[in-house]
Amino acid sequence: MIQNLKITSLSGLELIVHPLGARIISLKIPIQTGPKQIVEHYSSLKKYQSSRKYSGAIVGPYANRIKAAKFSLNSQEYTLEKNEGENCLHSGSQGLHLTNWEVTNHTDNEISFEVRKKHLEDGFPGNRTFRCKYSLEEDDLVINFYAKTDLDTVVNLTNHTYFNLDYKADLKNHIFMIDSEGVLELTEDGIPTGKILPAINEYDLSDFQPLDDRIFDNNFIVSSFGSIKLAAAAYCPMTDITLEAYTDQPGIQFYTGNKMFFAFETQHFPDSPNQPSFPSTLVTKDKPYRQTCIYRLNY
Image 1 (tube, one colour):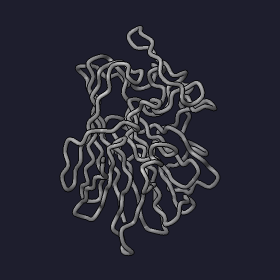
Image 2: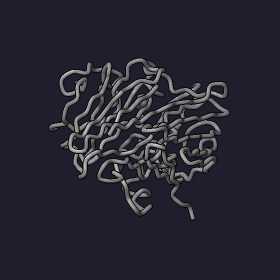
Image 3: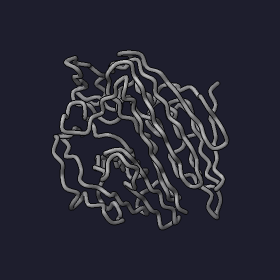
Image 4: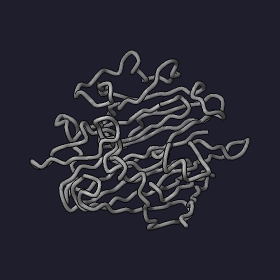
């Protein structure tokens, strides 16, 4: 039977992950009143296999949406599963989130996973190997992503953890900040039009502020793509907890859904394989995929 796996940091962070989707199912921080759970958490694995199948998981091979569930690469068209209307969301039912990953290393403060996908097994080209490593370094949760392939393919990985820094499943007592150069304009079904909107009005999160009536499921453009920098942060005055998200990716998907939890998903833009003007998600035999995401906690 596959078991939960735990790592800890010297400062007292405790992370529990499960091989299904290499997913985070618990992240506790040591505050004065005791260990505080800050992620969506269920005691039963069934929730993660059905209604909350993305919660905490590594999502890929292509996170977010691909228009019409198809793309062309090297004059070859590839067809994916349509699982959100006419589009493909998070790579469909054969995505990495519902795949059992192999544990390749496990120490007190670090755990590594690996999984392989065969050519066209999920609609994507190439025999591919995916790896992720979770490390707890003081008050940082560091996630390193890696992928290699034997054929040209596209890769866009992210971690899909839902956070809540309060004592109740509500975001009213949270304030948010995103350091952004703009936001992707989207169609009604969440597909980018190719146009970049300025980060003004409802998209201006340059200073900490509450959600109010806003609901986000938007990809914000991160400054200084390629180097690790602070992209977003959330703060809850009720608990005095701050979560900062650092990334080397060009975008961060800010998701607030039903306003019970939020997600900072570091990633490339949705539908990049069909958008030549977007940063490329091409991965080749000689050019593997790498990404680093850091969630830093202050409490």
